[in-house]
Length: 435
Image 1 (tube, one colour):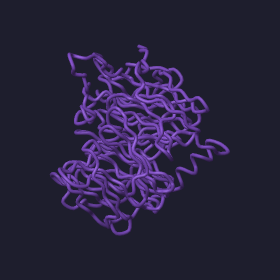
Image 2 (cartoon, one colour):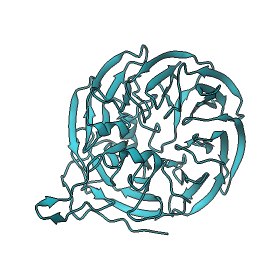
Image 3 (cartoon, helix red, strand yellow):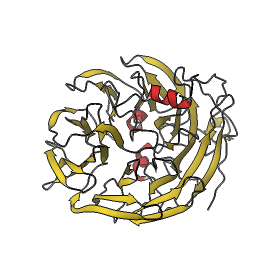
Image 4 (cartoon, one colour):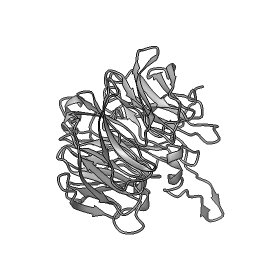
């Protein structure tokens, strides 16, 4: 049930850096996450897919923009409304910044092809942090490079820590924490899978930094860490799924970043309790005592964050293709899937209660909840079209439905802007913005 994770035998780099000073970690985090916006892949440190903004129940399409290639990640939004998005383009720019009001491109950059799998995160100053194969980068709001730090693998996305640093895990299983201002590593890299160190003649075994990226969506062994961590800003504990070498399925893992003058990364626990493993990002409860995770056989699980022991599981009836949206008071809306519908659960401590469901609505995206009991999700419209539905999260009442013109397939995430704008990119490569 428990598995000991191993630290790297060969640290790629060791640096000492003074951690960002502030009166308290809470103050630092507030400085990083200013009110509004959607600064990370799943909005916040606990991966809640919720917004502090009061959502509108009467939205309409504001603008659309083709990106030039498939999009596999959320749109991130600064508190100023500046949008950041990555795409899998064959040539040219693959990191983009757009203006919220008009959709006008502010700037774009061409990074390594691994950026297609990385969701940018953004701080209160609109500095953006994004991975590519073999590195993590930071750009300012004007697209100027602030720093670039080499790593092993491709950072899929990152989280800000309670002491103001940037924590991320690459798809090859390397954990790093870097200084937000300089990019310097504040702790030695922790390798979940020790890097190869053998030689054959004069040749050194090298794993490409973008290996397995195309398998991350499915959570296969080729992508050992297929999602972004959820982090408890008070304790430094963080949670993610990990597919160990030769294991039959992925595990849910808890680790801890200590912060302080001599920061460390240590193991807390791991569990293989999720049948079929999991490929979606875990979500923390509002008080950080519960971690929620989907398995690959159609159940949502709630586990104790101290021990990893299951508290309950609920059969939602389909394999969810993303993480759940979870409010601070435990209202849970699972993401859709190939056959997933729209429903809501309430965490009652030792079990989950079904609040409502729409078995007739095929959900083809990841939902978002806002203040005012208002939620948004993308559903099938007609034979193969898509629409954004607005609904009451307490009752399930559909209060608005807006077509995504020309959209096919499914969307890859729903983000909320600082003025209540609703953003969703489609897998085939178009960004839709409602206000």
